[in-house]
Image (cartoon, rainbow, N blue to C red):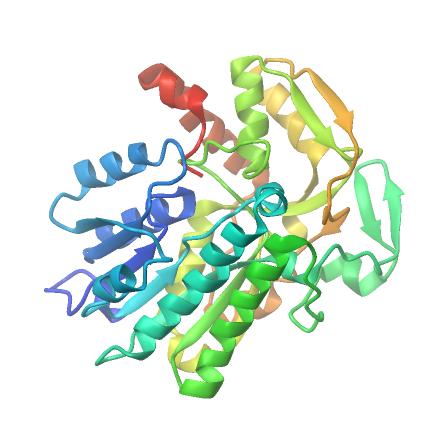
Amino acid sequence: MSAEHRGGGAPRAPALVTGGAGFIGSNLVDRIARDGGRVRVLDSLARPGVEMNVDWLRRRHPERVEVVIADVRDMSAVTAAMRDVATVYHLAGQTAVTTSLVDPRADFEVNALGTINVLEAARQSARPPAVIFASTNKVYGDLGDVELVQEPDGYAPVDAALRRFGVDEKRPVDFHTPYGCSKGAADQYVLDYSRSFGLPTAVLRMSCIYGPRQLGTEDQGWVAHFARSALEGSPLTIYGDGLQVRDVLHVGDAVEAYLAAADRIDAISGRAFNLGGGPENVVSLRAVMAAIIELTGRPIASELAPWRAGDQRYYVSDTRRATEELGLPHPRHWRDGLGDLIEWLSSLRREAPALAVAGGAA
């Protein structure tokens, strides 16, 4: 962890977490504060249910967490929030492909323009902070050129190296859907601000992150959405055939990666890293659904629907660069992490059933 966040003395400067009321953001804020750091959260609270995470953070860390309710599209608010920070974790964003297809302008403004605002505010600071950006595997497109075979447990590449290690950072970016374009543009701007302006930046291209504080919806956060469907007894729609494969990563492991990137920013600035569960956490949608049914003891009624725009039949992160250069620990196995998520969702249903049903906080 970066020196600004360590305990054992007064921290020199706070961290700024944009989107800090969301799923990954709230977990990251909690971790920094638990380790003795101070955190400023900038969040518009646009997603239903995220107020729950703000309340949780304020109760746990009343002296260490400051919440600024503002939008990353507001340059003046971003500039003010950037004051005296040492590290910026830029997690705020529009997160759903489906939403980007309905309103591509808003998607662009939040993801691309919002990121430019963060970068410019950082660049113009008296002491420019490091910027760690939450990107996505969607920057690689639908991987339609990758030859796949359909196996009983899901799709797998024909190429032996790709099957063994997954998609690495040498893969050319190929933006599909407005969401892919807006996140991809932001991804490239973050990298270029290191190259053009010397701003210390790094990009984490995330696969599927899951875990506590993720409620999930049909459009985003599919692992939590599947678990909620079982717990609530609500029907589930599978887009495609359910054999599409992902490498899922527990949010605790994702948080470790963000902190490691900040800690090692001098060595990694201007670089992108694929972040996911890797080949050891490869799982199909059908396999996750079966595991949830087993863990909850509850059936899930499901139906198939056509593939959606930009859907990848296969995506697995080659995590070797991130593991080696960020010094990441061995990731949690997906079945163990899935039990952790189900336990949290179950406790939320007991303590705040209205929030659990409403969705959000992802």
